[in-house]
Amino acid sequence: MEKQFLALVVREQADGSFTRSIDQRTIDDLPEGDVLVRVLYSSLNYKDALSASGNKGVTKTYPHTPGIDAAGVVEESRSADFQPGAEVLVSGYELGVSIPGGFGQFIRVPADRVMPRPEGLTLYESMVYGTAGFTAAASVAALIESGVSSGDGPVLVTGATGGVGSFAVALLAREGYEVVAATGKLEQRDYLTRLGASEVIHRQELLEGAGRPLLKSRWAGVVDTVGGAYLAAAIAAARYQGTVTACGNAAGAELHTTVFPFILRGVRLLGIDTAQLPLPQRKTLWQRIAGEWKLPGLEQIGRRVSFAELDAEIERILAGGQTGRVVVDLWAD
Ligand SMILES: NC(=O)c1ccc[n+]([C@@H]2O[C@H](COP(=O)([O-])OP(=O)(O)OC[C@H]3O[C@@H](n4cnc5c(N)ncnc54)[C@H](OP(=O)(O)O)[C@@H]3O)[C@@H](O)[C@H]2O)c1
Image 1 (cartoon, helix red, strand yellow):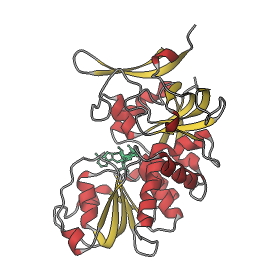
Image 2 (cartoon, rainbow, N blue to C red):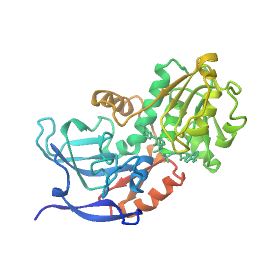
Image 3 (cartoon, rainbow, N blue to C red):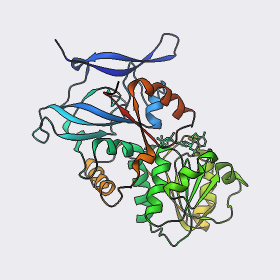
Image 4 (tube, rainbow, N blue to C red):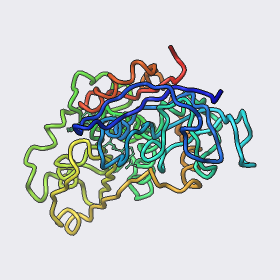
């Protein structure tokens, strides 16, 4: 009999609504690909929650299994690069967006989408980072490369308690930056301080005076994970030759700004994309995460949940209630 496994399946109903259920699937249901992976862990990113709730900007065709991150063991392979039993990561590209993703116990993907587990991280640890931690690392690397150094002044992180935000706070603090964490959850002040924030502010504070072309010069660097009015305000308050990275849109996709921060203060705005990042760059950044940027106390950031608990976590992240990272254990009861 064809091998059966469990997967979260999102379906579009006749009335345009979407439902989610954990269903039996067979390996034949998976698309063609060189490498069949038994997924041990996935993780929950904001993008997964959008895909799981029927957002057609992320996933156009349903039924669909989300999950942009997967860590597991090669079950079968037609590629000489991967032998059965090898521990691997698959994330980004089409995974969990247009092909069945890590919220299923098996995935099948082309070999050029697969990378060996980075030495220095377990499969579980790699999913505590997942795409969110990877994006934080890409943002911090971009700030450093643009010339922002730890003595230049405070670096702002928006959406600080979220997945990208938590890792950005911790990585920046590890690199010696003075980190100001902006959050809607002031009750998580201790969590952010433990991660390394020097100061925790309510995100509303960023919007004081918003709309003016320039605000009081404040940030040497910014890791923005939310977009919208917060990104605009962060740009307006960036210091002379400060760098602002933009990776997210949890607060809005629009950006209303003027040219003045750019032409009067030389502010640099850098876009961060990790979904299409070529595999060689992906491997290099993962090696850095597993090496010099491996953080102690990952258990502070990551929480393990079972398949059965995933649905509630999807609702929580959509409502902006996520703190840290959720790792999905695909085989837990
Ligand atoms: N460009 C890329 O390659 C890439 C990769 C990964 C993620 N992303 C994007 O990065 C963002 C963060 O992803 P994530 O997985 O870290 O999500 P997350 O865990 O949900 O974190 C987002 C955080 O943003 C804040 N937030 C949520 N809704 C908000 C609102 N309406 N207004 C202001 N702040 C709000 C909350 O933090 P506080 O309560 O602390 O304020 C929330 O915890 C998402 O937009 C995601 O799509 C982009």
